[in-house]
Amino acid sequence: MAKSKIVEANKKIEKAVLNGYSKIEDAVVKKYEGIENVFVNAFLAEDGESVEEAKKRIRSSLDDGKEGMDENWIT
Image 1: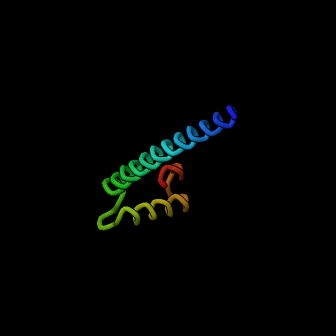
Image 2: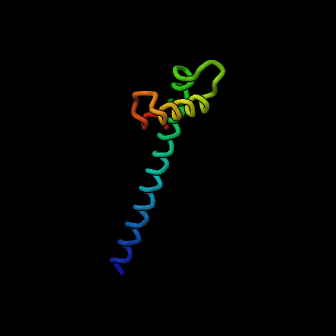
Image 3: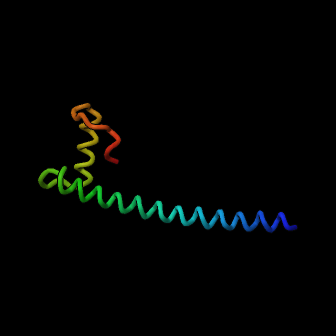
């Protein structure tokens, strides 16, 4: 009986910790993506090009080997 209560308590703690971590992770990723989009728009997008178009162009140029950058630097 006592072991069962401990197991239940541990499961509740585990669920709360994982839920909290997930919320923090989602917030950090969302904020990073926003900063990334602002950077791409300000420094990498060409005139009249959207952020998504700029990212696509950069990815394709990295795939073609035209750039000397690490291909993992942009998502």
